[in-house]
Length: 173
Image (cartoon, rainbow, N blue to C red):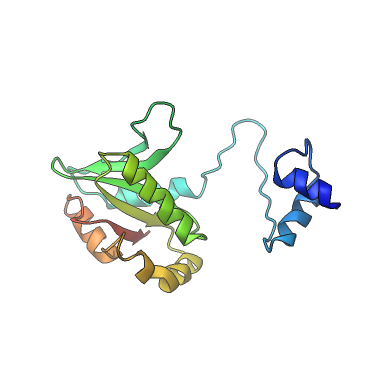
């Protein structure tokens, strides 16, 4: 790939890049290309997240009830919380991650949502219970402690009692 082609690809000015061009560009910056194919009709790109939210919902005791895809309260803002629960007094916004790769990006994204949503309440970072996510969390848990002080046991205990946790936390399901 020529330098000019790479520049056009990076800037989104290469009209129809080939799969080979995208893979070469990814490898050049240390990324491993990965491709997932979807049916031509209605693509479900959050297929791993749907069962994660279902497992979370099964943990909730009354009066907690999960509302999914809660939009940000800013007109034309495409962001949404994956879910929101309330116990009548407190609110928690749910952000689900099937695979935790970039801890800093997830932290920043949640921080911005909290900043922009006055009704966010505490935040529960919901992660798939996989060996990969457990390794990433073990390596970065203390860096996330300020933003998510509660561990999974404390979060789950509150939810099983039908209460929103007293602080933000991380829950593996």
